[in-house]
Length: 70
Image 1 (cartoon, one colour):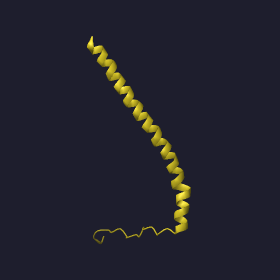
Image 2 (tube, helix red, strand yellow):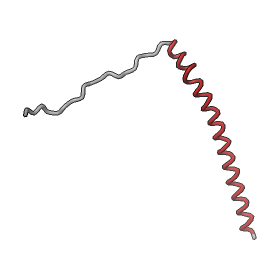
Image 3 (tube, rainbow, N blue to C red):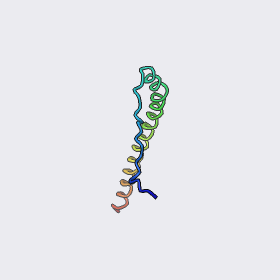
């Protein structure tokens, strides 16, 4: 059996081509805007959850503090 040295991976060119202005506009309208609308609602909802968590935590500290005063 003949030794061939190290095997080497062929080099591939997977670089993307530049998008046309029409493709960019289509991508913006069909993918980015709808996903952005959904994400905005999700972020708003999670902000409310975070604020409520902080309020509940402070309420628990207050109630625990009242119990420790006695």
